[in-house]
Image (cartoon, rainbow, N blue to C red; front, top):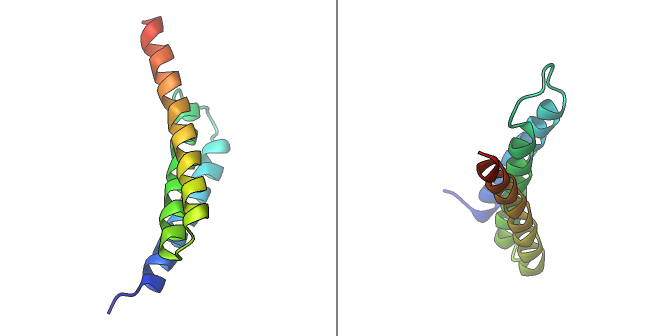
Length: 88
């Protein structure tokens, strides 16, 4: 039977994997063209996972803060994409 504790554990595991991906991204042998955008997306994903985990722990305030962090990061992603489109 699944419990909220199990959901929190899986969300924390996913957050840890996102952190690992971010570390690997920072240490690429050859920089990737979209590395900056990928980094922001990974950080946004981490914030969303943290928000979901906080909601499962009934920590509404932390969940909202993490959600706002994710929103700010996604705004940066869209700004970069819009800038790239405007250059073309």
